[in-house]
Length: 113
Image (cartoon, rainbow, N blue to C red; front, side):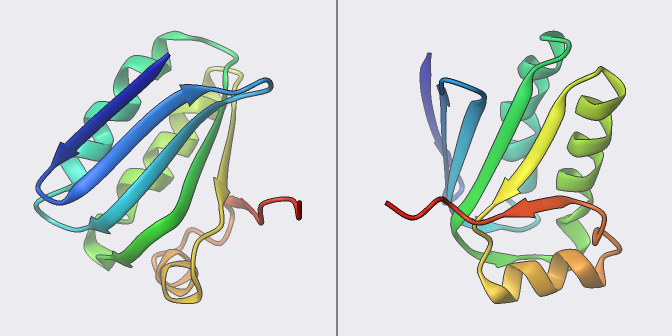
């Protein structure tokens, strides 16, 4: 599966990896784009027990008022027996996640080549 969506400046690419569905984001997550992220994640909730990796390496700005979308997605996937990992947020995005009370998220760095 490879789905690419570009709405309001947030590009979302979804693909099946060997161990997880990977969602790459490129752009900013703000009031005009957070619904794009929510819509991209919604169909994946049907796959109970799935593993999701949300790659934030391409996200420049995360609006603190929209960080809840990521936390809610992580909670919903975990409630359905899945795994939700945030990968490669920059320091600014990581700080916003922590300030928004999402320090509990599983955050990892990409493996070195």
